[in-house]
Length: 197
Image (cartoon, rainbow, N blue to C red; front, side):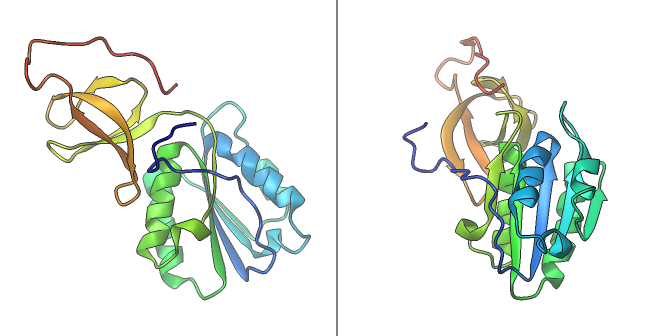
C-alpha cells in the first residue's frame, strides 16, 4: 500500500440498508463486487437499486445482476454513456439516495467526482476497485487526460511530452499526475516499466 496520502482507498461495496434508493455504477469485472453486495444485502435492497453497467473483462456478466432482482439494469456501451446516464439520475435524485461504484480506478474516480459535483461527500460513496490497475493520468503541461496508462513513463496523447506517472492522485480531477521526465535533456528517453497492469 502506498504511503502517499492522496491515494484513494477502496474499502469495498457495502449495502446501506436504510437507503431509500441506490444508484450503482459498475465497469467490467466490478460486477462481481456488485453481485456480492446484492447477495449480502437485505432482501428488499435490490428492489430499490438502479444499476448502470458497462461490460468488459473475463468475468463480466450482467445477467447475474438482473437475476438478483434489481429494480433497473442499464447495460451501456461505454464509460461515457454510463457517466452521462448517472449525471441525469443524480440530478433527479432525492434525499436518501446512495451512490456505489465498482470497476477500474479511473472509472471509480470519475463516478466519485460526479457524486461530489452533485453534493455527495466522497466518503459516503461506497467504492470497490476491480480489474485493471491502469491509471487515468492528467498531463500537468497541456492538461489533457490519458486513459488506461499501464507504464511508469509514457508519451502524452495531448502534447507528446514524455511523462512520468506520479503516485499523486487528485480527487478533483479523478486522475494521477503526469510530469515531464526529460525536461533538462529532451534527448534522454528512459525506458518505461509496466507498473499498473
